[in-house]
Amino acid sequence: MTEHEHEHVRVAVIGSGFGGLGAAVRLRREGVTDFVVLERADSVGGTWRDNSYPGCACDVPSHLYSFSFAPHPDWPRTFSGQEHIRAYLEHVTDVFGLRPHLRFNSEVKLMTWDAEKLRWDIETSSGFLTADLVVSATGPLSDPRIPDIAGIDTFPGKIFHSARWDHDYDLRGKRVAMIGTGASAIQIVPAIQPEVARLTLFQRTPPWVMPRVDRAITGAERWLHRRLPVTARARRGLLWGIRELQVQAFTKRPEELGLVERLAKRNIARAIKDPATRARLTPDYRIGCKRILLSNAYYPALAQPNVDLVTGGLSEIRGSTLVAADGSEAEVDAIVFGTGFHVTDMPIAERVVGADGRTLAETWKGGMRSLRGATVAGFPNWMTIIGPNTGLGNSSMILMIESQLNYLADYVRQLDVLGGRVALEARPDAVTAWSDGVQQRMKRTVWNTGGCDSWYLDANGVNTTVWPGTTTEFRKATRRVDLAEYEVLRAPAEKPAHQGRTKKKAGAGA
Ligand code: NAP
Image (cartoon, rainbow, N blue to C red; front, side):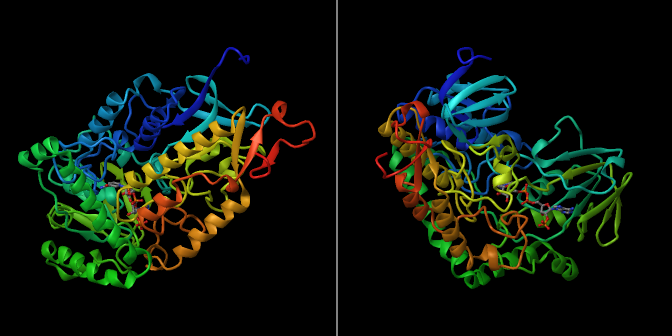
């Protein structure tokens, strides 16, 4: 395609989950309307579109797990189900007029930085475009991970991942294996147990599961939230404040979490009467090291006569026989993998080619590193939402996303102030200072000291996913873009005649 044939936009947002839709709203609020949202599927919703497994719900209360700028007084339950959250995102899309910006069935295949023109060349499954700025909101929970199990090809039955549920396959009366005991699996198990003939649960590491205080939000409460929006705000504030106060125990004083372990053990004991089974279900690591799960139905389902608990990971498949690490075997008709996602090795990183011709995956080979969870040295005008170390162990990710949207808004403002064809590139020393600071704080946290392995840690055992502080601290750290942390790049034609390089340091007359 020639220069004049393809579309050029100011901003290309990738993904239409909470992060991408939030970015779209924020851009419009900043007066930026020249942007597109590229979405590989045919509807919005991200992980809340893809995860439609039986029992799927959020374990963060809905009044907190929603945008502050789009309150929803009519949440039906304290913890809403997937269908309500998905409907909320469709509603946000309509109310904020985002439809004209959406490009469905547009999977990003490759994006390459053009250092001469200071823009991103973007190849998608629906065509080519260029953009001044890329906001990558692909999310950490978007690409399912199915472990490389020996003999998986020999299995004659049905296989699917929790995030790719096959609703056409009828599980009723089938012998089903559930692999994994993470947040997804513990919701699936009680939802399918009454229907299946036999359920074999392959537990590699037991999770800590706390009771779930879930109830319908009454008509009176909803009426009050509609009539007096301040009451919905107060409810959100309370939910936020409680979690904010808990953070210190996770980040600085994990020993305090021992009290919570006692409550979780009581949750097991309430449903599981056999001491040997109780022991198999009781974790040997500090609570909070892996995500704390919430369920009142999980342990009671495990106590049912059609459920077998196998306490060894799935290690081999021989035809329809599944072999666990402890040598036990199970004959099944279907396998459901609740084995999580590519978080620290996100596939989109292989499709981003930066200023020096290296992919983001190559740059992050030794571990994901960023500036303030958003930008990466060598990748000018490229920003990620829910980037490295922006995850939370105990609160709502929407709070972190909104902080990143503040950063995005100021980034766009800074580009405007600088004027002309301009790009910002995170300085390597700023990235190092930020990442080292985060890792220094990480040392005391329960995620690093709790004695478990989790998806928070990358292949080198480094925690590159969780934010080791309060959401307030992150909000402060992302309020403004500090130009001293960036190099200002100018297109060659705009450089002063004496300047040989395309890079020019911030503060040096930029
Ligand atoms: P996950 O937390 O990564 O859990 C994966 C599970 O698969 C773990 O139990 C893991 O065991 C197990 N596993 C991996 N390979 C195995 C093998 N060969 N044999 C047996 N087990 C194996 O994935 P997820 O449950 O999909 O959850 C991912 C994240 O999504 C959550 O942490 C949460 O942030 C989010 N989520 C939230 C909700 C909610 O809001 N309620 C619901 C679902 C998901 P090990 O523990 O031994 O590694």
